[in-house]
Structure formats: C-alpha cells, structure tokens
Image (tube, rainbow over all chains, first blue to last red; front, side, top):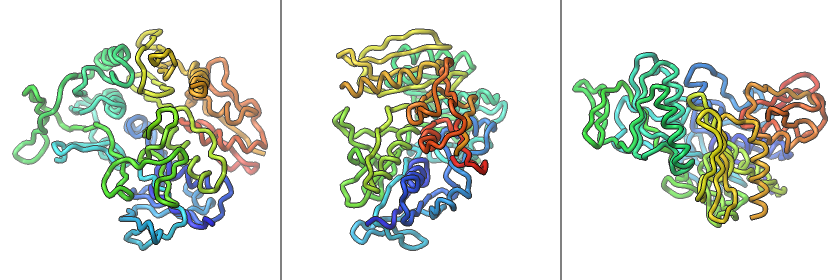
Length: 381
Length: 68
C-alpha cells in the first residue's frame, strides 16, 4: 500500500508528478523536495521573456494551490543521499520515509573546468537567470560559448537588449547535427543579420583575467583574443542522477519510469526511459517529455494505465523565429525543405522513407497536423 | 461546471488540448486553438490545460477561481 510518496526535485517533472497523483485521487502524503529555494517555476522563459525583463511571473501554479493539494513543499533543501533498503531520503532537516520515491532531480548546467572562474555565467536556474540579466544592458560585450538552444536564445535576447554578442561554437554550423546543414545555414545567416558575431569552427582555449581578477575576455584555440565583459558557457547539462548512481549521469528506467530499485521511479531531464521505438534508453530534455513522463510515473505509482507518451516536441524562440520541432532529432538521412528563412517546413526522413521528424519555422498552423502525421507513422512502425 | 479561456497570443498550435479534450477545443483555420464550449463539465479540460507547453489555457471553477 502506497501511503507516502517522496519526490526529489521540484521542477516541472517533480511538480507535475505531485499534481497528477492528486488529480488521479491519491490521498496519501506527498512530499516535494526542491534544492532551489523558489516555489516550482517554469524554466523555458529563463532564456527568453524573463531574461528580457518582459515576464516576471514564472510559477507553475499559485502558491495556495500547493496547500490545497496538500503537497508538502520542502524547498531550499538537498537530499544528501537515499537509503534504498530502509527507504529513507536523508536531508539536513531529517529523514523522509517513503513507500515510493520519485527522482526528478533534473540536470545541472555543464561548466567545464576552464570556465570555473568569476565573470563566467551558466543558465539553468532562476538564480542563474537573475545574475545574467543584471549584466545585460546596452553596450555590454557578451561572449556565448555554445550555439545550442540556450546559447542561441540568450544571443537573441541579449542582442535585442542592445548587448554586443559573440556566439562561439566548435561546430561548422549551428544545429547541424540535429536540424541539418540547410537549416543550420539559414540560422547562421539569420544570427549574423541580427548583428551577432558568429564564430563557427572556433574553440575556447582559456578565459582571460586582468591582474585585479576581473574578466578580460577569451583566448580562442587559433590564438585570437577577444575582449569581452562577460561570458556565458552554454554547452549542455549533465543529468543529476547521483542519488542513485553515486555520480552524475542519467538514470535508466523502463517505459513506465521504474528504475531497477523497488519502489523508485525517475522522470524528467534526469531520466533515460526505455524506448521500444529506438530499442534503447532515450533521454529527452523537452518540456513536453518531462510533463508526460511525470504523469506516466504518477499513474504507475497508483497502478493506473499509464496513458500515451507524447510524441517528442520542443520549441525555440530566437531572432524573430519560432522553431517548433516534432519527432526525433536522430535517425534522419534525408531532409526536404520548403520555404525560406522567415517561414519554412523541413521534413526529416529515415533511409527507408519513414518520416521521423519535422521542423516548422514561423508556421504554427501546421504543427497540429504534423504531430498527428508523426504519431501515425510511429504507430505504424 | 468549468469555464475555459485560451490566451491566443500564447498559443503555439501544438494541438494537445484538441486531442485530450476534443469536446472543448479545436484547432482553428489559423492553426491555433479555439474554445468550442466555453462552459463544460468535462474533467479532460484539466489534462488539456496541463498539456499545453505555452501555459495558454486557464480553467475557472463555478466560483471563478482559477482551477488549472
């Protein structure tokens, strides 16, 4: 009998798991432990509207809603370790006893050793975003290392704020591996048209400091020195699976979010769930995946039917473009493009001609139809 | 009964609402979601609101408190 559920991690996945448990009628105790001091909030805006100062309200639900759901929030608290035999989550505020444990610990911004000095930012949490936002004003010179979604979105927001932006990546085109070279070329020219100093095929050798310890800039691998006021390193996130693994990394689960340990589930950015479609564990850092997995885990805890896993989906707003991607960024061999840099559809096909993904740029009208088309292909596969 | 509102300036046309609560939502000719019955007793609207990646759907209860 499940009476006590402890959820570690108060991001979207952990919060949604708690909400779904209640929505499905669970009347035992739910404790949601979050390392950050803030009430559960939405992350996608951190690199966009929040960073731009255009949106302050990020809460996943009103503070009173947590009380009426009778979810015990333990915020600003880290679970130090878990005892899988005595079923304890150990913290500085004492031990939490669980019948079911949900690990929704997310991921931490990856900060390579060369970037651990002052003046170098990462962007993952609300506090990170506040620190970065305070430094973005007209005339500031920002170097961003990594042209993935966080790097590109911050570049867009910062350029809009009048910041002088340099975007650096080792790759020869942004998003070449995930979205393909044609889309990469379109995006690269878009970034440059918006005044971004885009440096591709470029790596960072070291961060440069003045004798007083303040940041001076970067030295690139080719010896170029760039004078900059601040640096954002946006080279991905490491799944925070240490409670179960002993060290960072993903936690593998079955399709229902169960780990190999009795009574322990994982969902969200930390979890690599078994995918029958790919015949391996797949970890997706998408909002919709975190929300969907959390609901699957909640229903699993209650012994209810899990419901369908959503087709992978993510979106990105950058440089006046809304990118919406449905399907898998892997396994495509051929791309069919239709449109130009201001409005396009890209369809990604596998060798056997199966549609595996689609990207829409400024074409929201087609998203619903493409989602249905992809879901049908996945069912047929 | 619940009352539903969509902020169409936030809607991105993802379409999960129309799938999960087809009685209450559909995708209009511009690809964005439309409320087909503003007042409903269908609990599926909660799932629809939760599934929206843009947080564009609000559900109010009979006392006009935001319920989702």
